[in-house]
Image 1 (cartoon, rainbow, N blue to C red):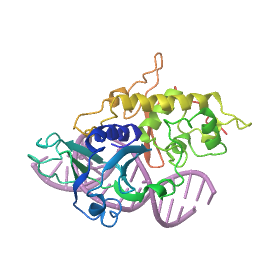
Image 2 (tube, rainbow, N blue to C red):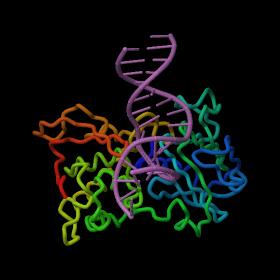
Image 3 (tube, rainbow, N blue to C red):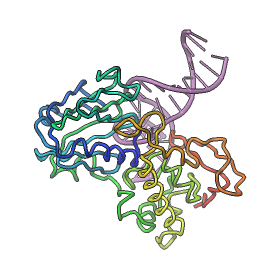
Length: 298
DNA sequence: AAGCGAACCTGGCTGC
DNA sequence: TGCAGCCAGGTTCGCT
């Protein structure tokens, strides 16, 4: 469940359980996820205090008293469940009876405040790494990463500058984490719909010849911010599994206007269009062919 | 260089 | 009921 709003939802859920607590025991139950765990993973965590829990794009960053940062990425199916001390593990099909570990519980963090944090990831596209605080900006995960869409950098001007001259479809440009980092398939579809932009329009069409942003570029920047912050407020989107660390669901999926709505009527008032699906670089794009017509040329 | 498709892995749903 | 086929919120690799 991992685009920016879901990761931010997880961060907010983990924060009270982890920040200010020490790792008393870390159980790493397999040698790798998408990548091998770093050397001596558990030993480097045990005894360390979590000073802060941050987020960059779709990555969670736990600042440790050792000076290292625990980097966590959820991939496609990664999720965290927090169990407070004394509680028996419950909600969710992933966790077998009373406190036992489920099939894909790969890491369990026990904390000095009595809480347990379990990382579950059926597909194992997620990963964890440990990097010195001083090397965070330049480490392989973040070097070359694009701007934060909820930060101050996102504007019509930056979109025009980043997209100018690119013939790649808008959909692909928005998914490119080297340009803007944190958007994924759902929120790109939703943002393009709200802006009335065709997903196959060339990314460069948002920059005028002068290099200045078009009106649509300004709108797109605002819409991206709106969609993401609305989704964060809703606790993210829940598609197949819980989005929040206490097992409860996000509910932004009820606000989807095009994502996963192929064949349904367009929600725009007066619009007679039907939501269509097309495949771009191997991924489903949902859009309204009537509302989203903007500049397919150039 | 940019832009596709495939690959990584498991599970859930659809349809025969 | 069983099984094949397709699809899934992400990222990276390798081939045009």
